[in-house]
Length: 176
Image (tube, rainbow, N blue to C red):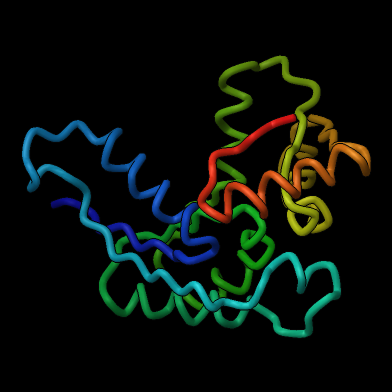
């Protein structure tokens, strides 16, 4: 029988829509019934992950993400995904709340990078300051002896403008 995917969405909403679009496009389906069943909880008002991680907000998104995962589990999903890098800092809170598997975007990225280049020594990380400061990618890659490099302050400002002012605003990225 087919599996049902639970999606913790809304973190951000465009990332959720993009994930769902890619899942549909990459599914080998010749009819509607051949697509993957999903239940998506697009909870856009989850407290800001980056603001919390940088100490700019006391509103902890971890318990909210855990409750959302529990809701998805109660609806009968077979496993859960979350198309938000920064929110993966709260993975343990989610895992503590549910019994179904949680597929990590961080672990999938490390696996894909290592498959692409088994001799990989370093990767570049373009992400929010929350993702960078959480060190979730650093920890995952460093388990394999792979260094994670991040932009200097000026370049990070450019990355943030692209993420927040363009991508999250629904605009195409305009890289200088």
